[in-house]
Image 1 (cartoon, helix red, strand yellow):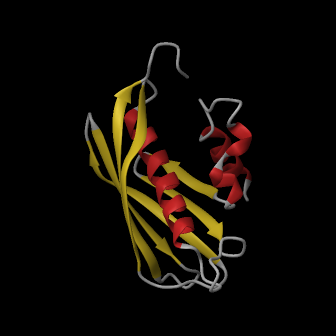
Image 2: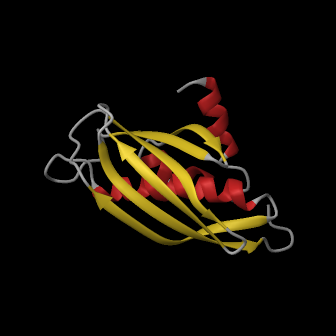
Length: 147
């Protein structure tokens, strides 16, 4: 992971309850955030360690990557005084992956005051689309005193 990617990983933890900071699912699947702007969030996971019983990348790993990248995108678009929380996630698994790395790219489809919807495209090391996901987040004002 590059120094820039490491800094992005720390930035995405801003506002996380310290009691939950060491219990993040993103860490358990090996998610690395490579780029994070309101227009585009990019991350990768290794296939190794994220398999289902048939030796393929687990569909839940695809869903976790999609939810994570889409949520970061939504949070960046919501602004510092608002919170974005997942409302609906849809994943279509196009191609099995047995090894290497999967890269996800989240881009906004809709940025509104009450909802933000992102498309997340996952690809394998050869650039082939393996999963297409759509995440809609609800956006609310943060409660007083929340980080």
